[in-house]
Structures are given as structure tokens and as C-alpha cells.
Amino acid sequence: MARRVLGIAAAIVLVAGAAHAESAPAPEPSPTPAWSFGVSAYTYVVPDERDYVQPTITADRGWLHLEARYNYEALDAGSLWVGFNFSGGDVVAWEVVPMLGGVVGHTWGIAPGLKGALSWWKLELSTEDEYVVDTKNKDDSFFYSWSELALSPLEWCRVGIAGQRTHAYASERDVQRGFLAGASYRNFHLTTYVFDPDLPKPTVVVAVGVTF
Image 1 (cartoon, rainbow, N blue to C red):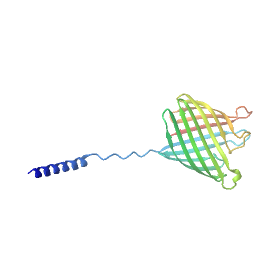
Image 2 (image 1 turned 90 degrees about the vertical axis):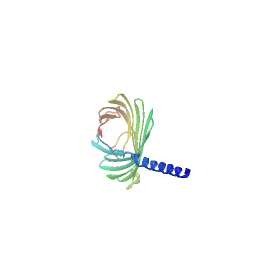
Image 3 (image 1 turned 45 degrees about the vertical axis):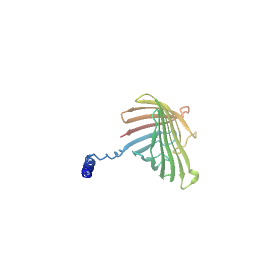
């Protein structure tokens, strides 16, 4: 009799367990990261040189970073990039994006690159670097860099200093230095750069951008 009671009790436990497993909701799958995009255009006013516009389009989804540029590594040259997004930090936030790109047009080459940024309080330090390996003439290989240190006294504006090393146009100085002033409204951004302001004819860059 005792064995029969134990058998019935065990059967009830098994049935109840199976019913609970069927009624328990399945775990929800992790949400797929959404795409985010950015479009910018930098207008260069270069003394005694050709003025030009340098557009850039970016697309990000989770760890994936995609980018397309024109008139960046050289005038009349375009480049396509793929990279990986890494970020972290709380008080001091950081971002690192190692990339690899291909350059075609007036310049042909392969370019490893890196984007990085550090943010603390109202300060942000950012840099964008790459080395273009010219596949047609190795003597034309070139290291490019654009760096900024900016303070945002208000949420909608920022001021700071900037420096660049470029091969897109000729300059009296290997590294151009200057200052920046920018404003933003929602996802729109406008920034003006003045490089080598101590020269009689400085280089002026006006950048507009939107993110969505």
C-alpha cells in the first residue's frame, strides 16, 4: 500500500513539473542592436590652394562600424572603412574604434586606422589617425591625424583646440594647429575651425553634421 501511495505521489510531482515547464514563459531573445547613422561635410577654405568639401558617412550597429569618405586622404580620392566599436567607463567614458580601409581614386592604397575618445565632466579629447600605404608609390605613403580637445560649458556649445596632419593640400607646417568653436541643436552640429591663426592667411574649416 505504501509503495502504491509513493508511486501516485511521484506521478503527481512529475505531471505538475511538466505542466509548470509548459506554462513558464520562454526567455525573451536579446534585442538586436539598432542601426545609427551620421552624415557630415567639412568645407575647407585653403589659402592659395583649391577649396573643397570633404563628406563622410558613418553607419554603426552594435560592434560594427562602417564608414565612407571622399576628399579625406587626398583630393579626388574616396575610401571605405570597416571597424569594431569598443566603449566603456562611467566617470571617465572611453571609445576606441580600430579600422581598416581601402583608398581609391587619385590615391590608391590600404590604410589601417584608429578612432578614440575620452570624456570626463565637460571635457572631451578625441583623435582620428591612419596610415595610408600607397600601393602605387610607397614614397607617397602618409600618416594622417586629426585631434581635438574641447570644453562644453553649456550642453549646446563647445570650444577648444584642434590639430591636423594632412596630405590633401600643401601647407607651410607639417602639423597645423588652431582653435574650434561649435554649436549643436538636437542631432545637428556646426563647428568652425581656424588652423594656423598666426599666419597672414589661416586655413578655415566649417563642418556641419547630423546623426540619426
